[in-house]
Image 1: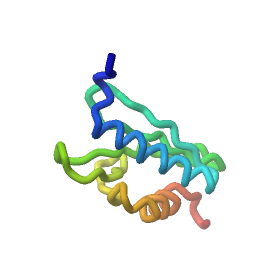
Image 2: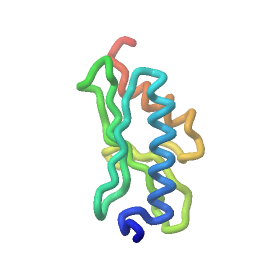
Image 3: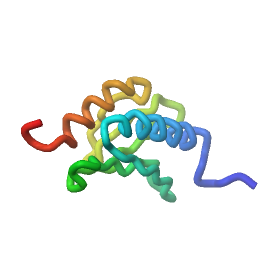
Image 4: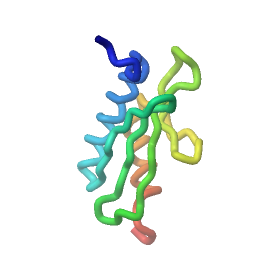
Length: 100
């Protein structure tokens, strides 16, 4: 029996978020992937050194068969899911304590 929450596109987004989490873990961040019903898959990204610095990073395409993008919780695109280095760099910049 297949899981109706996990379409092929959503599974791809989960895989991208898992990959993002592995990259961020090397910088002291955690990423818990969440697969909610009816909304995009997202990762709850937390700076482990400063727990108040966190964001829910979504991964989805605006078109059914389009390119996956990572998105900030406020609806702004971060970068295409294929550009993982750019995504990690931007997350590290935004979720780092001031003055670092």
